[in-house]
Length: 343
Ligand code: MG
Image (tube, rainbow, N blue to C red; front, side, top):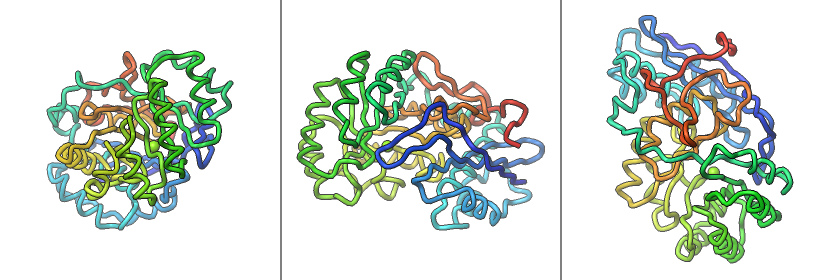
């Protein structure tokens, strides 16, 4: 097996603003794992508020020693060995995990969803994210989002009600709100959630900082809407800790380290009675396509990352009737677009 990797800069169609940062590009590192002329693709996505960087990912990848003879049938052993290379580095681990699963699917000739017996008829419509912006811009973005069944808005500033009102001026579609830990007053948070329920909101993602445990339990017990953990849960080992604090969890490949851990999280969350959202960063079609193979197992899908990118180096899972549907091609189902523009 041979490993190659390339940094690439995703350019976003619009400036993307959260409660804590704003950006126009997202760095990724593309990974290729090749065996006997067949190549599996993977991606590490590196938003600036996560600890991993292009350098840390490349450092991690430079230390990996892939087996020369083993077939990806031994995928669990190979992933275990890769994961032992470093303690954190979850985006880099996710890139390798995705590339190995892509390779496994290509060698067996099956899309991952077929390999895993997942029925893509069960996939739910994805939400489409409108970043924090002026009410005027949010109104325009909501109007332009006609191809989507559900809208998601990033809140957590003093302007929250004005932004929701701006959407409601032009759209009555169901809304999901992501606070990114931006509310620090539990009474204000409950007031807002009660108001948001009247505004046809489906769920609230990570309203309070992850270290405000008692306040989060209080809010969970009183909230009329499901509260979903994002920053508070990264891995399967975090799931028991958020029971009784959140109604569901947001699983992202870049947080957890790849498809294998994501599938473990789905199983753990289901047995803990927690709902499941499959989310993403502003990723290319590579990581989004990988996630699309497990998205039918989720209650809510938030896989709009590649739709926000202007220079996607891959073609893969596509938006069909508001849903992100994996292609019926082996592995994660992507091809490198624009003559390997990233090389
Ligand atoms: Mg979130």
